[in-house]
Image 1 (tube, rainbow, N blue to C red):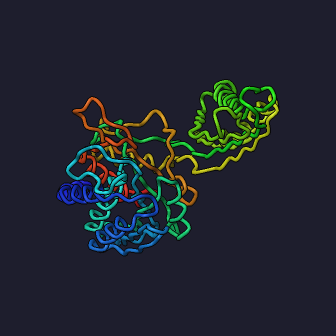
Image 2 (cartoon, rainbow, N blue to C red):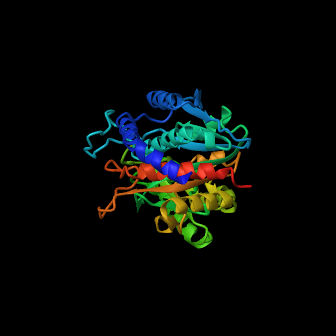
Image 3 (spheres, helix red, strand yellow):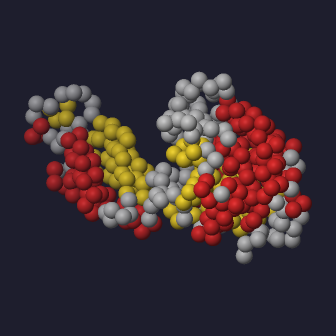
Length: 393
């Protein structure tokens, strides 16, 4: 079966590169993936899959029935949305939409998903069970997975697989991680409420800007001294808004940021920990405060057995020297984790770095590029793992 999958993927390579370049040239933002969804649905339909559109607003489901008697459903997820970034790569197939770019590789994810569907459709007589392909919108705003789940995308699913491109490792390489792969990502809003006054008489006012600076500094210092260093926490304030004029002491400052963590127990304690620090600083200087902590997507926690299956399949396909067990989790976030509340799953990293370049630009960069040979690596790895899934207990 592995040889069949490899041969089909190789024959499909020119078509898959064509698909990827079409998707790359026509990026769409989160929740606006209308043309992308229509294109994906067309490819799935032409390969004999049962297609449902408008799932999770602009998502697409393609179902492939095998001929075996195993009634377990394996889901394979691929996201489709792009980012509000002006592309500067100068590629022949660069984005045709000003200010929007596939700078996170979702065009590759969608292409690998389509390629996997095309390969398995050709081999469905040998497929023991059903595969459900989830082409998801709005990953970049961490809402698409929830939309898909609400529309029943995970109904009766036994397990789910996904992938994400990884420029830090070379194309042709697969990266795996047992347990935590990505971080939980939460949103933080802090309002510092002081008292306005003349800039020349600060002692008669309560300076919200200065107190806000103390809050930021204290939070950053406290992480290194009160949080377990083996359980990382990253707190970044990305927005500060306050003040009305250079000679008026601000009475109100709003801080907005993101909080990343890997361990559920640590995450559960963070809202209380942050509020205690904000309260302590504000009380010291006579200010009031408001803290709003919003939990976002949880950490992706890869299922051990499915990760073992991915590793065994990838090593059989490519050799152990092209399969890496990654030593560290990423503090980036992925709403693939939402699906894991409904079925066990695993996500792997697909190497897309150019071997002959000393530097590969990171995700979300206007010069981000992909070695397209990685597409076949992704398709073969995903398709063969899917086939072997039904041989597992």
